[in-house]
Image 1 (cartoon, one colour):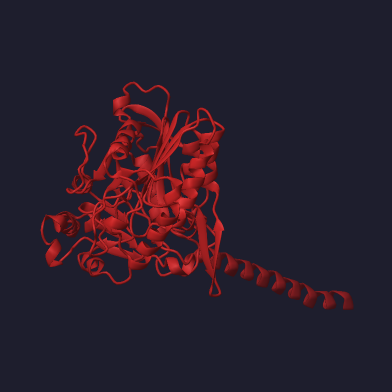
Image 2: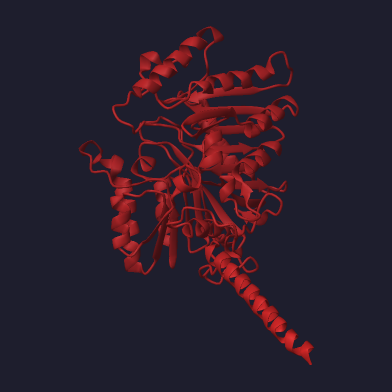
Length: 484
C-alpha cells in the first residue's frame, strides 16, 4: 500500500516541472517575438508578390547646376526637381521617404534667389500632403531638424534611426516610395543643394508595384528601428527581400525586358535574401562584355575603423578586384570618373595610379581615369558643381546607389541601390535606361570639367596639394594638380 502513496508526490513534482518548462518556453517565445523586427507588419495595401505590377516605366533624373556648361540631350534629361513633383502628383495614399539630410529651406540671404527656390517648393509640397489625405512617413538619422519638426506638426510620422548605436556609421540611404508602386533611388538627398548646386543622378520607376513593395520592405526595416539601439536577431517575413541576385524580378522597363532588384548595406542591415550593395555592383561589373563606365564622388578601397581609441585602416578589395579582373582577364574597357574636391583623399591617386598601371605593355587593355572638377573657389561648404553621382553602367547592366565607392561606406553606413540588367532582345535601344545613363556619362567624360592626371613626375605635388586642401578645406585654382 505504500507504493502508490510515494508515487503521487513524484507525479505531482513532474507535472510542476513540465508546466514550469512550458511557461519558460512561452516566455522566451514572447520575448523573441516582441524583440523581432516588424512582427505584425503594416498594411501593404493589398499588394502582394503574386498580384504586383511588373510593366514599368523608368526615367533617368538629373540635377545639373546652371553654372555647369554641359550639353543636355532633351530626350534623355529629366530634371530631378520635376521628377520629385511628378511623384507627389501621383501620390494618393502614402509617401515614404528616407534621406540622410533634411535642409530644403535655405534662408541665407545669398541663397534666397532661385538657387534655393526648388528646395522650398518641394518642402511646401510635402507639407500640403496632409490636405490631400496622403500619409507622409519619414525615416532619418537627423535628430535636430526644424524641417522634420514642422512636417511632424503637419501629421507626418517621423522615425529616428540611431546609426551610431548600430554600426558607428551614418545613414546614407536616399529613396522614395509612393503608394507602394512609384519609387526613386539616387544620389540626391532632401537638400536644397541637391536641387540647385550639386550635380545629381538617380532613377524614377513608375507603376512598378513589384519593386515598390520590395523597397517598402527596406523602409519597413528602417521604420522598426525607431528608438532601438540593437538589431533584433529574428526577422519578420514583412522585411524579407522579395528579389535578389539569385532571384531577380523579371519586368518590362519602357517596353524592354529586364531583371532588377533592390540591394542594401551594410551587411548588418541585409535581411533574409537581401543582396548586399557590393555584391550587386560586382554582378554588374562581372556581366560586362565591352565597357564599364563608373561615376562616383570618391573612390577609395579602404576601410577605417576606430577601436578603443585606435584607428585601424585596411585594404578593402571587393570592387577593386573585380575591376582589375575585368580589365586584365576579360579585356573590358573601363572608364572611371571621380570627383576632385576639397574632401578627396590623397590616397585616391595611389589607387588610381595602380589601376592605370595594369595596362602597361598589354594589348587590348584599356583603363582610363578622369577627375571631374568645377574649379570654382568656395567660401562655404556648398561645393558648386560637385559631381555627386554614384553609379556604374555597362553594355548590359546598371547600378544606381547612395554610396561612394569607399570601403568604409559599405562596411558601416546604410545605403540602398537598384540593379537593372537588360535582356538581349532590345527592340529599341534608345528606350533603354542603359543607353540614357551611358549618354549622360559620355557627356560628362567629354566635358571640359573632366581632366586626366599629369605625368608621374608631378605625382608628389598632387599629394601635397591634396593634403593642403584637406587642411584648409578648400581648393584653389592655382593649386589644382589636374591637367587642363
